[in-house]
Image 1 (cartoon, helix red, strand yellow):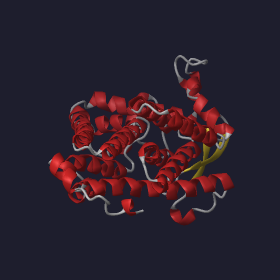
Image 2 (cartoon, one colour; image 1 turned 45 degrees about the vertical axis):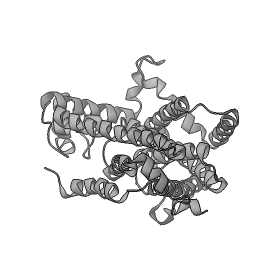
Image 3 (spheres, helix red, strand yellow; image 1 turned 90 degrees about the vertical axis):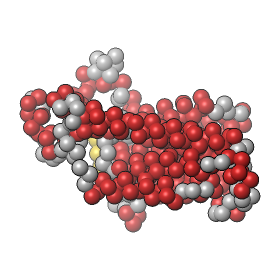
Length: 357
């Protein structure tokens, strides 16, 4: 049974579907998200560069002093979310939306906003030191540049921005990212460093416990939100060290499978597939209506959503409101152009908010 909190999260998607009805509203949504990226990203980058970690900037910028690699500790940005990994997952979406608009936006002002959002959001991901989200961002960017064949001028701009941003990355960031190789079975130490990395060791224990729960109750799972309460009991049976706090699997899909079983996982994955199908359906309708810019925005949104889902391989559903916001936008998109030819004729030459600039 859904709790009131979960029903509230689902209602976010329903409200978005009800309110997002016209193509120009989709443009407004994209640029609203980019403005959020500029605001949060700029504050976050300023906080890290200046080392002003004691100032939460009105709650928009928090930071935690955590392990980076080995015995090295440092501050990791956690933004208004309060956790670096979940914060990074959200900023990946904004970074990818910014990259798409940077390449395809025709108006100079909004191209600058898009580039600003992309750069600030990407740097924020770096300053969270999130390894899983970095993998997701790189994979999504590879997908992006596979779909869009860049012109020479665009490629130069992207490369210059990329190199400039990497100059801001602290050496400990590269050490943390390169430590991924140490925990792989094919790594230089045969994966033995998993025992020296507390974060990886904890996640391995949590995901192993989740898998055992799936095997124990494969069809129905252990119940919604019950993983954290049952973790200690299952951990004891596996010989894991007891934890001082409730834990969650750092994998959204394992979490869903453990708590709702194969049936629940099937429903969840179906929802994601249908959401992606809705985005691609909207993209096709935009193309048929001769609205190339909107088609590009739909493609960028699909890639940004894919980046979020890839990052979910390394985090659980602690902040589902962001997921349901993206789901709501995805399911609303096909309804923006019910009749492509009619809608393209009715589309205002100057859309209502951002095209006035």
